Image (cartoon, rainbow, N blue to C red):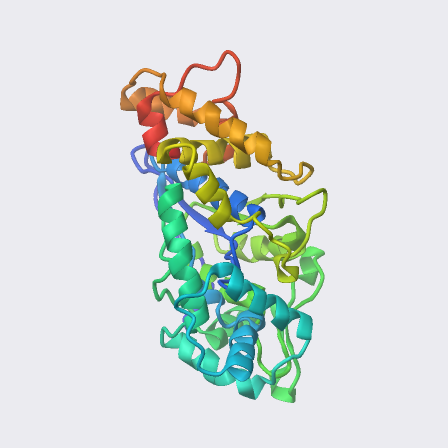
Length: 385
């Protein structure tokens, strides 16, 4: 008997008592550099969405570095480090020092052969992580703790549910794939019948890109959820339109939520070019914690990166506005009255439209209105601290 790996399961009977099942799937950040303001904005946005939606639905936060390590930008960086630095000890390096090596790797413009990357890809499938990225993930874990971010398994081995061949076979069975590997060609995701362009997802020499990895991870999960929320960089919108179309065919409602980057001095630059200076999470946290206590820093960071910057990417990073938000957070923490769980659920539920998830921008902005009721400790503890 042939099993269709992409077949949607039969829908369960509708029951009023059944809570909706939501999968949050934010774009991952390659562990090769510091967390920039753009990264921090996306992380805080996802964290508030996750924590605010939990009282109202069954929410799973899927964020697996294991899934995306096989991309060339990660494996290529690891091969570059081993080729240029040998058996270097990364345990005492900062994320900025490791990030400087990543900038050098991208600037070199050399593309390692598929054969030289294959041992790294095989090791990833067994749970191995290069020491440089392991060091980055350790540093990020400390920053997650200080910021009160839910850790979805930064350092855990979380392989995707489908192998690459299985995933491609399932797509081909549904007429969504052009696989030319048998003639040493590439693999394309084919949704042209839906008016979307062909997209190469595997190179002729067998290298998967980010979209192929996302499909390995999300396709086998899709049938278990009523709603899938994809949070991502707006520059990747064409790929996420394709991903939405594939996942929608498996049954769930799919929501795309682009979260704009944060310009520095009016310019949006990719992290691959460096130039972070003191505008990354380590120094920002250190400066904030030197003046404010941890709860005020956690709330203030969310007020600034979510409510003040908003979903777009028009406003440059402004340290003075961040500091104002930290002061505002400290004042908010000193006010507010307790409320029961029903009142909390009602307040959270007001910030949904036709979707199950709670909109982080609408919820966080509601704390800043001049006539807004002071947030009670339950809301702050549940969502913001």
